[in-house]
Image (cartoon, rainbow, N blue to C red):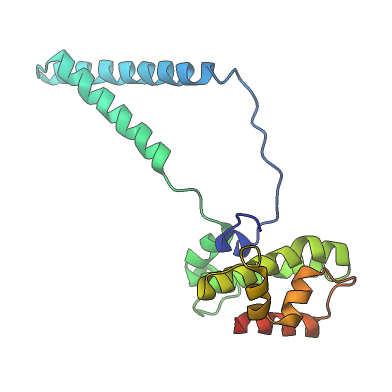
Length: 199
């Protein structure tokens, strides 16, 4: 079982390879470059603040100004490090105003509906080839089953295979353990999903 969360499973995003960033320098140069850039920015802000204060006739101690500007840059850095990751497209869609959604007649739009609808493309893509189904849809169904029995019974197929098989039932456990030779029909897939919902 992989470390994929339920949010990753429902996000609908196709798996992509790791993004390669262009290398500008070695890893040792990066912290030094960041420090120099921040110091240059702090120096520029300090010059502007000193000029502005002198223009209006205020006299403030230079060490106090330097400490204040450095504190602001430190807070800015901490906020950048602690900001949450970007939301998935399904969440963005769910949080958007329903009146702005094309084709929506004012119905309430929820994140679960958006996530479920995001499965439509992978299911269509895998409907005719067992290899695609077994590589794309079956692992997601297996992780959903593991998540359901983990939340309700505290086990997964990996942690306690015998108990998990009893909880899943023979049909669902066999389906998840032995990839089918052909993609299941919509009726068979509906039965599998119904069994998942009973967990």
